[in-house]
Each structure stands twice: as structure tokens, then as C-alpha cells.
Length: 196
Image (cartoon, rainbow, N blue to C red; front, side, top):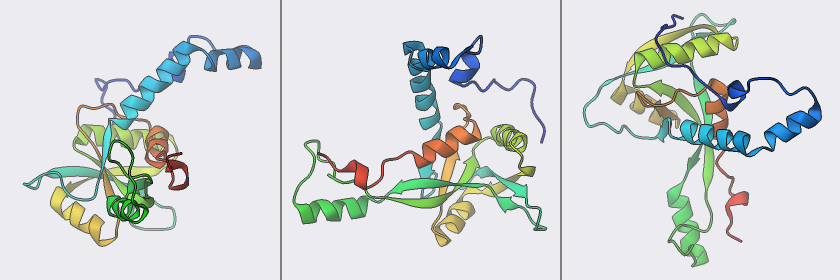
């Protein structure tokens, strides 16, 4: 996987630390500090705005997009890189609101209904796909390849297997793979979303 020398750096709050804490107490003080909390909040916002979870194509005209495939030790062909993503089910939320006869003050449903789907990690930019592939290889994935796909065909294929497309927009912050995986799983569950 090739890496461009001019690509912007990928920074996390932990990389801003100039010196490692020398004791557990110092570590606790650091992670409880306002600068650390603010840096974490900024990172979460950058990650959450770097992607969209889509069930249908956002474009009228088809265009090229880029997906990743990594080699599997027990397979000849590589597997498309996916992450599990929580997807909201507004039709179920509306039905529950109708049955309960109540909504929040702002008109939203009292209960958020979410389900887990496989999300195909997709890029608008080939350069971003290559950079992300290099990060996956650094984590131990074997021979990550960038593949060009037709956007409309990709969405049709994803719908046929009830998966979604996780689109990383060109020019946005490129998250680390673990940051993206955590963000896609982070939406609250049905049990946690009841308005007390």
C-alpha cells in the first residue's frame, strides 16, 4: 500500500501529549483534565462528521467510488472491508410513537430503534482509500487493495444483502480504523434511548 508524503497527518488526542504520565495518579489527573476532555470532544466531532451511513445513493448520476479488500489467509479472493454499524429504523420509531400516542416535545420519537448492519467502507477519494488501507495494514490486515467501483452498482449490491454504505467524504478528517469502528457502534441502544 503506497503512502503519499504530502498527505495530512492523522492526529488523536493521545498524540498531543508531550510526555507520558510517570505514574497512575498522574495519568488519572491528565485524563480528568479539561484540555484532555476538550481534545477528546473535538476528536469525536471530527470523526462523526467524517462519514455518512447511507442505504441509497446520494447522487443522481453514477460516479466512481473506492472500496477496500484485504487478503484472507484461507481464501484466494480478498474480502471487502466492512465494519458493523448501527442504523436507525425511523419507520419502526414512528410506529412505536403511534402505538404509545406520545412524542418528545421537539416531535422526535420517544424511542430510538436501531439495528446492526454490515457497513461497506467506501471513499470518494482514491488517495484517502490508499491512506486508510495503509492504516489497516499497519494493524495487521494482509495486502489491502483499493478497488474502484461504480456507485450505483455498489448501492444495488449493498441493498441486496441488507448492508449499508459508510461513505467517507473527500476533504474531511480521515479517522483511524479503530476510531471509525467505535463511532459506527456508538449510537445508543433501544433500551438506553427511552426518554425518562
